[in-house]
Image (tube, rainbow, N blue to C red; front, side):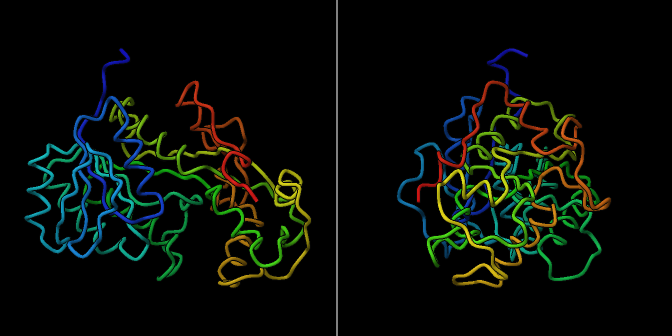
Length: 296
């Protein structure tokens, strides 16, 4: 494929204020393959002052199906990338997907950007991991091709996950020896922009991509950051229960993007389902490391 030949050039981003949103918008706005970039936002959402000049914000009521269809058609949208919150999965994200299908959108990227959610479907209501896996099944049912991106934990969340704000220590659940996948938001956004503009639809359709910028245990985090550590029963700080639940899940092995939930084991590192197996698709890219992102 010629470097100047791109498979998709018109993009729509759902959401304006998500944690990953500015990184997705920035990566797409800078990519030479992206010729049209729109950002859909609720009328009540505030517009950040520093949006790229080539990113057009369009306010829309997600309950207005006809308006959504018209926006996608008018802008010849080929790829829709959702950065909506977990709470919006079965609301704004679903409504956008139905409109995208009618408008002829080629690819839908649902909001994932975390641990591998394959295998969670049917495991109970009200769980965002379940919702994400079941939403992929919904996209398949309406025959709208999708691509899912699994990243592990954001590198910027490391201080929060280890409770550093509470006692200036790396707080460790269990032995702290279970590898966890970490990826920077910049790398995630750049990867998505790269593969959605260069890979053919046949390679993207109903596919999932396992990314990994760093593979670290919590003990290794303490060593790398040169900080003292403490073994704890719960991660301290505000939202201690949530922090403890997330880190506890990671300590079971599920924090790795190579984790197979159905088998409850790690996939082989050299397999297509291994942690970071998709990294090779962005040839020559240097992935950000812990010290590039976290300064304590």
